[in-house]
Length: 100
Image (tube, rainbow, N blue to C red; front, side, top):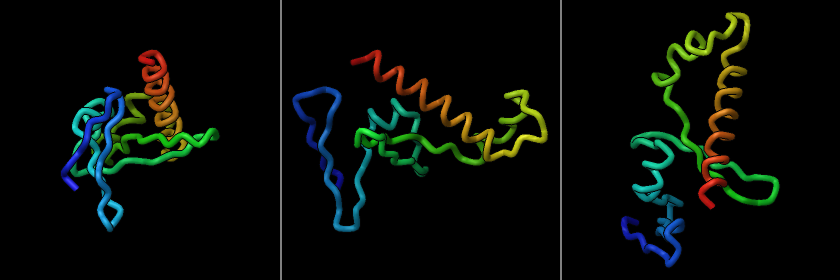
């Protein structure tokens, strides 16, 4: 599984998938997305069938998030996290769109 094959397009890379369904995210993509190992990622499919890979923040990274966001104490943490993830996703999507 540790073999990767770069394709002709610099924004694509072919990676092997093990019989257990495991694949290695190439280092340059992990760095670009801020994904650290060990860690978790989220796979999300858009309405047009495109698959998006996103960083999932660790609980320690989220510590103090509400205070930094000046959030009200009566807002559920799950709602705050969803809003922050949507904001991060929109920023990342606009960054990738600008690069194309």
